[in-house]
Length: 294
Image (cartoon, rainbow, N blue to C red; front, side, top):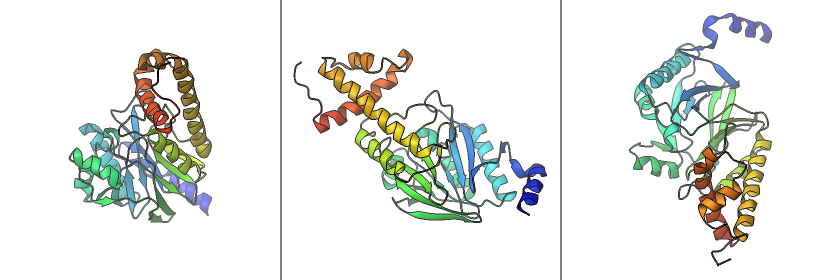
């Protein structure tokens, strides 16, 4: 019976349509809605996520241009009218522009609240976006009963103070936001970015042992926990190179970047310079380096 039902859905032209987008269900109840956004290259899109059915939440509506926002609105209308996915809230992983661009428009059109961690809410208030409800670490919200989909809020600061991931424990699916990317490095830039907090967040998310990881930038991956642990190890490896270069007398940012990031294309060195600052703050805090003369 299940096979027959699946074949009927596959043959129905409307079954995979969301207006100008396609219904790409990455896990039961979880639909990806990629949107062009002003994000950091090589990424060009932010993956908005529609999670749930009768109480669906829209995560990170980042579209910024009116044509792209219109496509998102039509997709949400089709999700409701054709597929019964009724929007109940907007959830933001954090406050960065490429994750919030369409939030106000979606709130106005569908009459739903914007929700974010309290630390993100303070940042958003500073740029004129009001958060209606807060998301708390450990909070669990059932957004669908058929299929059953309950999402746990994980506060994962580091990239941004109020950053959150959302975890489906039943299927071990992590909606990772900007905790990791499958396209490039996640930038951690002080003072909002904190490398100690970022490493702790990677450990926290990896401890959930996710199988499927869906990032905000890049495609999904089935090595979720492994990807998180590899990212953690890579950050520590990079940090060890900073300590070695520092002890060898390379103390200026330009000199450190040239030595520590010699495996990175020169065009990416401005981004590496921003990462370097976060590592230096962490290393000074721990006493691993100091500014004594060589």
